[in-house]
Image (cartoon, rainbow, N blue to C red):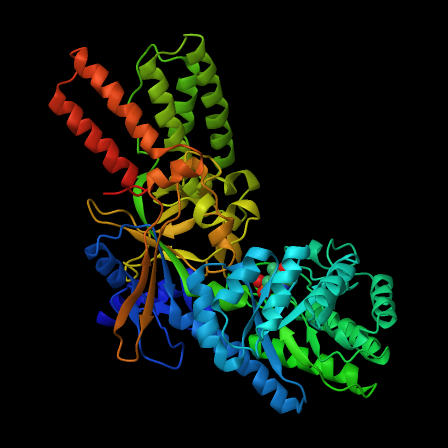
Length: 639
Ligand SMILES: *Cc1c(COP(=O)(O)O)cnc(C)c1O
């Protein structure tokens, strides 16, 4: 008997399977015995685990409210190590003669603490930066100390951008200017001559290979970036004519981000290696081949070539890349270059988790359906009642169609006054009663008709969440990217509700209604019923890449609180950095209000109200205090 019970009870393993945490978690996230989500900062091989609800308790004691973006520094370190270890293993297995040099593309996460950690921890691997603008270049220089690491300058470069890079070279930085447009070269050569610096030059090539992910348009011949073969030939000729061919050091391409299929990656590397070989044959010294970004993250844990996944591991990526470069170049006896990749997403995605609480739930209520209906009930409603009473497995579809038909009819009658409030209420209750009964019965059908499949979504709960999709998960809104989402506790309990998530903005697009699923995607997320008065916490995972600065200020919800933790082998941890989110006042300043002016205006309005006898002077004081506190408060819902 005990055995049977044990079998029937919902367990943390059931939760792990339902939410896929062991598939997408990459060993960094799992569930504790008591049903909390835990961080495993040292990955699979280690027992160290820190409960996230425990971290939330600690944050609250320190006065930090949710939503909070939690950054786990160890995970960033570990992702950098694992990338370098994969390449190191591939290089030694294949006896490749060049080295691996990673650079972090700053646009993926520009936050100062991210760059600082990458510069510090990455220096033992000579991990550098890739920049695409003047601001990013200055940010990189401010954090970089390692002169062996590469500083790759992409993007459109004006004179000022070029001068900054040349000054960086003078200071000893290993700065490489990648030509993206034909006209950049003459500016570079002029400024370099003027400053007396010998520049290191790269060329960005447009390949014919395509990436096949969300961002396919940024690679391929139709890409808006990069040089055609004929433009590259022009550059070689210009360099030769000015006796500067010895400055040409690097070939670069970028297929696009989140490339799900290893075959696309391999064919691009082969094509680029051929171009590299030709540049060497033209007499350029070269030395670096830079494959750009594209190393994908398995957001849904399916390990497939679906857009939110990838059909390869980091080890396989490194092996394939090194092997493709080597076999292409060996055929022509070209020396092996250092291999640069500009992996951004794969380095930072895992390291941030968005923690938020649920504010309220909207459910379709079980309205009461009476034993008998009043005599004067309009026929349309009486027909609905009939459909409800006679519902069976056989007439499901028909009953549902009737319910829809008469509901619309009753709405029309209500508009022109033929149905009163109580009759309308009865009709609404009947409609939901029929829909719920149909939803329950339909699972017994062998084949569920298409129309009935949507019923579950119509009946879903709406969980109102304390965060803004536009601010914190912009890619979920803009390009339908999926992020793993799950409750952070109560995972020993079966989640019996089916829900979509609505955010705190008043925008109907501010919602999440597609979720990861091992069998593809699903429209509803399984959640636990709210318990009176208890907080219910959810986490959005793998949000470290691209989400932080693409976010906007929709409805004037600002940056969330951000907390960085560092964890230790004994399971202890410390909050190494906390950055308070935007205040209401700061947000208003972004949109050109002046906080002081607002307070001045309020003071005189309130004074006027005192003079007119509408409030007392003491009430004026309270009012001004409230507004003052309001301006200094968090933009999100505070309990
Ligand atoms: C965006 C970008 C990257 C980063 O790509 P990931 O797929 O995030 O690794 C790298 N290089 C260039 C030129 C980019 O534009």
